[in-house]
Length: 139
Image 1 (cartoon, one colour):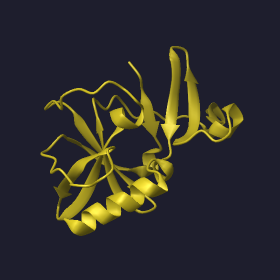
Image 2 (tube, rainbow, N blue to C red):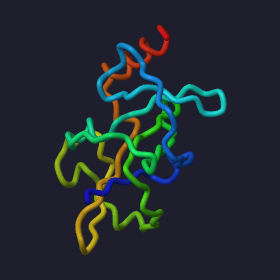
Image 3 (cartoon, rainbow, N blue to C red):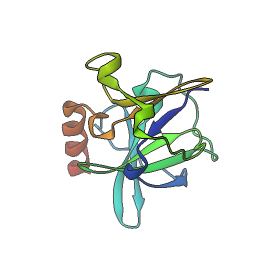
Image 4 (tube, rainbow, N blue to C red):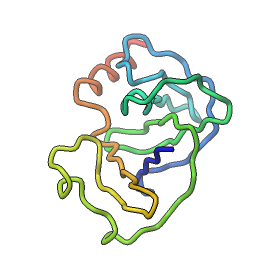
């Protein structure tokens, strides 16, 4: 099982998956949008971003609603495992591993593997951001 992480400060909440409304002409990484208390939030398919095999959305899947510098984003995930606290000293900056690693803010080493901490502010490319904004404006 591959595990991914976000800084807790970015996470607003997690919810079980709800109906996702397709968004025509959105980037392929965007599954569509959801309405959360009157806010339209784009849903990102992290399987697409990380070149993981696609699979059907299941009722047990979760949406992690997180804040970026540009607004809210929902990430479709298989499950949410836990919240862990680690001292900053345990986090290796991505540039210390390899410069220019996209989407990665840092890495934490565990006995059974590595967990990549993702930077949601760089998760969508500038072209994807523009395409998403245009698709939302058209809908």
